[in-house]
Length: 411
Ligand SMILES: O=C(O)CCC(=O)C(=O)O
Image 1 (cartoon, helix red, strand yellow):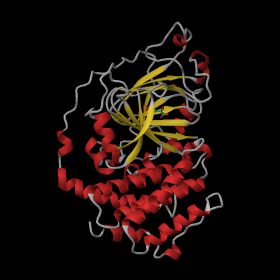
Image 2 (cartoon, protein in one colour; image 1 turned 30 degrees about the vertical axis):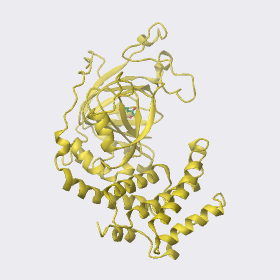
Image 3 (cartoon, protein in one colour; image 1 turned 90 degrees about the vertical axis):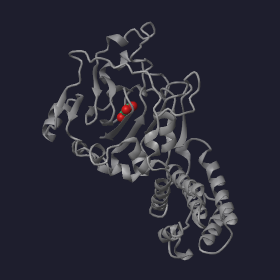
Image 4 (tube, rainbow, N blue to C red; image 1 turned 120 degrees about the horizontal axis):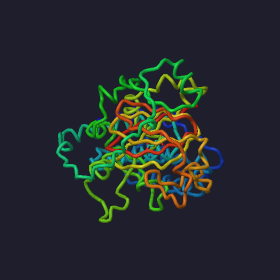
C-alpha cells in the first residue's frame, strides 16, 4: 500500500506550474480559486481534512450545475470542473495509507468523474482508476479467494422459450464475404444471423465472460444500472451500483428483492461501459462488416447488455445499423420491418416515439388490433451468434438466461 501514492503521483504533472487549470468565464472566479487551492494542496503538505474539504466543495458546486436543467444543456466547462473535483478527492483519499474502504471510495470517485465529468488531462482519471483497481484486486485476492464461487443461486422459474415457427426464422449464414453480406443483406436491409464471425473474441475463448471474470476485471467499478422490467414501465428507474453489487443483487438474486417482486430486474445496459473499463473492450472486436458503412471506427457506438433471465427490451427501432453479438446466454428476438410501423402503434410522445406500445408476447388485441397482422421474423440468439438488425428495423428482445450481449451501432 505504501507505494500507492507514488504510483498515483507519477500520473500527475511534475509540479504546480505544469498542472493545467484553464476555464472559460462560465466558471465563477471563486470556484477557480478553490481549484487552484486544491492544486496547490496536491503539491504541498497539508492535512487530509483540508484537502478533502476543498475537493468536496468543488464537487458539490459542480454537481449542482450538472443537475440543473436537461443534461444536453449542461455546459462542458462544469463537467470538467466536476472531473477536477473527482481527481482532487481521489488523490486526497489515497495520499496517506488508505484503508480498504477509502480505496473503494477513490475508485467510485474516479468512476463518477468518468461517467458524469468530461475528460481532463489526457483522461487522467482512467489512468488513476487502473492503478487503484490493481490495488483493490490485490487485497480481494488475499482476503477471499474463491468466495464468489460458493454463492448459491436462488432458483428462478424457467423462462418460456418460444419455439421458432417454420418460415419465420431469421436466416443464418456462416462467415459470408464482405461482398456477399453487402449484396444479400446490407443493401436490401434484410436481417440475418452471422455465425462464426466472433469465435476469435477473447470474450468467447481466452477470457470467457464468467461471473468470476467480470468480478475480477470490473467488480469494484461503479456503473449505471436500469431497474425495472422494461423502460416503458412507470416504476422503471436508473441507479448507480458497483458491478459486484449488480451481480449479487440481480444476477445471483442474493438479496434486496421486494416481496411482490417489483423492480427485481436490473439491466446493465449502456454505451459507456467499454470506454470506462478498457479491459472488457480488449475482449471484443469491431466486426469487419462495419467497414461497409460510411462512418469511421470512432463513430461506432458499442453497447453492453448484461442482465438476468427475463430482461426485456420492448419493441423499438434505432436510427443506425446494428450488429447484436451474443456472448453469454441466449435471447429470444422478434424483428418487424419499418414498412409495418403503422401496425406497431408507436408511442405518441417525442421521447418514446421509437417504441411500440404493444407487449409483443402478450398483445392487447382490442387496443392494438392491427398488431397481429404485422409479419415478423424471430430467432433465439445463442453465444457466438451475431444478428444483423438493419437500420430502423423494429426489435424486441427477451433474455432466456443470464445474458451478456454487445451491440455495435454503425452507419
Ligand atoms: O439486447 C437487448 O436487450 C437490446 C438490444 C438493443 O436494443 C440494441 O442493440 O439496439
